[in-house]
Image (cartoon, rainbow, N blue to C red; front, side):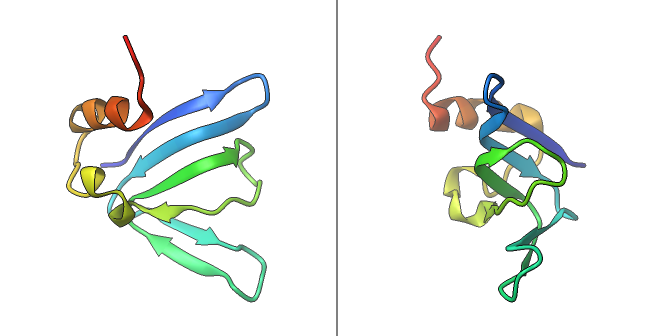
Length: 88
């Protein structure tokens, strides 16, 4: 199972924050450089471009303790709202 939850600035085509969950996910940080590193498992994009082929780096979900054991989007919603400080 994989899923994402995010906040996007549509007018400037930027993702403010996006959490991608999935045990089999793979992402290359610093793609095309001598410092390329593969991140496996769930990860987070922070202020990144939205283009599919735009270079962007991610942070492993393990750096965000409140999201480490989340396995469904239902479990993710409340921590995401709290983390992003969304007010109703």
